[in-house]
Image 1 (cartoon, rainbow, N blue to C red):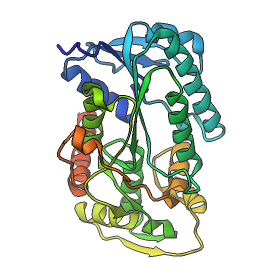
Image 2 (cartoon, rainbow, N blue to C red; image 1 turned 135 degrees about the vertical axis):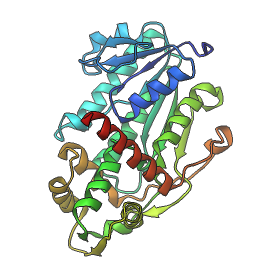
Image 3 (cartoon, rainbow, N blue to C red; image 1 turned 90 degrees about the vertical axis):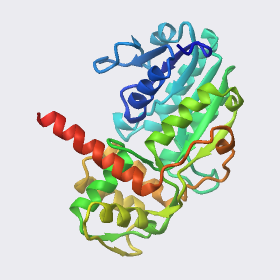
Length: 308
C-alpha cells in the first residue's frame, strides 16, 4: 500500500481521464476518494465515493475532509456551450475556498497548451484562467498542460475518427496546417500519477506532449492509413474554425457543446515549449500511430463486450 501521500481525491472521476486515473491510482496502492455529482455507478469498490458539486459549495466540505492531494479534472463544456467560462471560473473559486479551509496540501490540474498571446479560443482561455485561480490557493498546484490526447472515448480522438470514417473527401479550413503535439492517454496518466509520487513537481507548471509534432492534416491522414482508408483533404481559405465547427457537429458523435470549442481552438498552435518534466518523470513516450492503434483496439474490444 502506497500511503506516503495520504488520501487522494479525484474529481471529474466519470470522465475520459478521471476513470483511467482512478484505476491507475488504485493499482499503485493509493487510498482514493472519488467525487461524483450524481451517479456513482461504475466507481471501483476499492475507492470511497462521495457526492459533491463544484457549483454547490456546501457539498465540498465532506469531499475534501482528510484529503492530502486532489486532482482537479473538472470542466463545464459538457453542460452546454453558453456560459461555460463562467461555470468553470465559479467552480474553481468554490474549490479553492473549500480546499483552503480543509488544509489541502497539493492539487494536480490537467489543462491545455496554448500561449497567452496567441489569441486563444474561449476554451483554452478558460483552461488558463482555471489554472490561475487554482494557483491562488494556499496549496501547491501542479499544472500539466496537454494538447490533443489520444485515447478511446476521448473527445479529440472521437472527432478525428468520425471525420476520417465519414468524410473520405474533406473540404477543410486552413487550420489543418496548424501544428500540435498529440499525446497518448496512457502517457498522460503516467505523468499524472508520476507527479503525485514526485514532490519535486509540486507548485510547478509542465508542458506534456508526445514524441512527435504533427499538423492536424498529418494526424488525420495517418489515422486513415492505420484504418486502411483513403482520405483526400482540400484546404480552402474561406472556412474559419468557427464555421467549420458547425459541419463537424453534423458528422461526429461528440456533443456540439464539446466539439465546437475544441474546433475553434485549432487555430492555436499547441506544442511543448519546455520539456523539463521528462527529466523528472522519464517515461517512454508513445508514438502517435501506436496511440491510435491502441485506442482503436480498446474501442473495438469495448464494443464487442457490449454486444455480448
